[in-house]
Amino acid sequence: MENATQPGNGTLRQVDAVVIGAGFAGLYTLHCLRDRLGLTTQVYEAGSDVGGTWYWNRYPGARCDSESVFYMFSDHLSKDILQEWNWSERYAGQAEILRYLQFVADKMDLRRGIQFNTRVDSAMFDEAANRWLVTTNDGQTVSARYLITGVGCLSKPFTPEFKGMETFAGQSCHTAEWPDEGIDFTGKRVAVVGTGATAVQIVPEIAGEVEQLYVLQRTPSHDVPGRNHPLDDAYIAEIKGRYGEVWDHTRDSFGGFPFSPGEGSATDATPDQRAQIYNAAWQKGGLGGFAFGTFGDLMVNKEANDTIVDFICEKIHETVEDPEVAEALSPRYPFFTKRPPLEHGYYETFNQDNVTLVDVKTAPVKEITPTSIITENAEYEVDIIIFATGFDAMTGALFAMDIQGRDGIKLQQKWAEGPRTYLGLATEGFPNMFMVSGPQSPSVLTNMPVSIEQHVEWISQCIQAMDEKGVDCIEPLPAAEEQWLAHHAEVSDATLIPQTDSWWVGANVPGKKRLLYPYPGGLDNYRKVCDQVAENGYDGFAQTTHEVSAVS
Ligand code: NAP
Image (cartoon, rainbow, N blue to C red; front, top):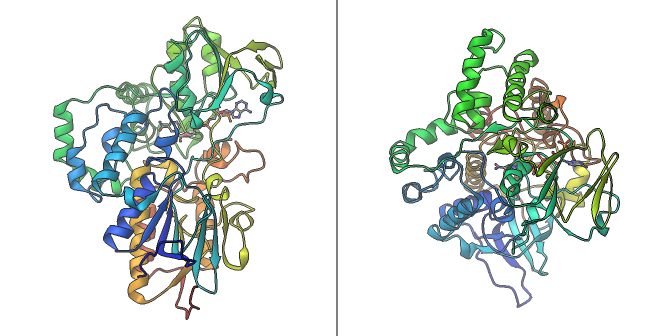
């Protein structure tokens, strides 16, 4: 392995690997490559600290939808950290998760491998040298053998273009670009645009502060109660006592959660049995248990899925006092075809006098003026507009960089008709480049840290294997990529997900290719495929060794 040399004397700095991003993915990749394999590894991070998603998303109410005790690095990173860290709530808030990642970075001595406040502008594959030339926004270029993206699936904010929005004289911001100084909502008239997982968190959080809150809804979501609560010492001790078994179960599960999957068809149960099963999961709270722990066919059988939709809509009508508002909030399309948010008092908020649900499906936003939002049938005077309008997911952050592979082909060009990957890990024409949680991998359909660990471990074992074999260039074979695409399409079409417009299928961003971006076949099945590929000597990858010209 080369040693890194510092820039300044005209020599191009050489490292073994460049990693982009210092969230869960970047931190674990740095540890695996630098501390386990001994590779010189440089991480670049646009933020001023570690955290990724949890660094950027600081809006009030930001909280994880996975239970905190399972939303962390496993015993594969460090058994000591598992024992030392104590979560305070069932679902940790943003600040606590950020503190956890800072704690991990400090304990594992990761900060010295990260250059903060630095964005990667471009990454060009230099075929003659068989290396990546990575240029950052501070004008530096570094040469790396491997390029690993850990840029997050939801890190490129998406704000729709509304006529006149630039004229708005009040304060406005996207939830993922929250100002450091915060926003004072006291006595303000506020509009929240969107009703996805982010809006569902922010709305109840600020409803008590504002004078008037308008929630602009285009599509209602299927919100499942979180039933958050403080964690007591006995529970923490009990989990810590069986973490080994918990992680084994988690790694071998469909969604990256240590829950037993639901069995049987919802249509075979009697209405009473169904009500009992759904109610038990609803009372317990939590997305995984409700979506995957009730019946086995909700994601693939429309008739079965209708039963859970009816149940959710009934619950909304029980909670929201005004029947018209309750019906407007009722999502009468298949459950889990858009990401269902976890809610903490969202529906109750609509019983407050100062909260108004605005239907922008039937009467879309026409214009934003300096003082108001005008829809097709009304004008709403506001002081603050919060855009909880989501992200250009999975490909947005990759395309934001100028990544050019063999023959100067840009990633956007190669993926013009949608992502083309092998296992969601790599793409042909971009040698020695690996993506953590890339498109066509399980990623956002699973508990992210568990999927991230699987990816990072597979990538670092692959790199180790290539070094042992003396291979200096690895990239997918076109046929293997084609096969993965066909498999991905087949598994996607077997689910109900493609039937609904959502960011999962890219429908939220105008002009984005409509297809399912994550892999819906389950983390357990996916892991087996990846393991098999590795066991077969990295089947489906071209592996070559070059005589490379010296780099000046
Ligand atoms: P999102 O789910 O994409 O929701 C965006 C919202 O904005 C939708 O309600 C969308 O309506 C609306 N919208 C977009 N363009 C609009 C327009 N022109 N007019 C009116 N409404 C418009 O984004 P998000 O809520 O930020 O969540 C994204 C993902 O981040 C989640 O699905 C989840 O995976 C993750 N997340 C996780 C957590 C957590 O774990 N705690 C919290 C927040 C977010 P349509 O539905 O009609 O498009």
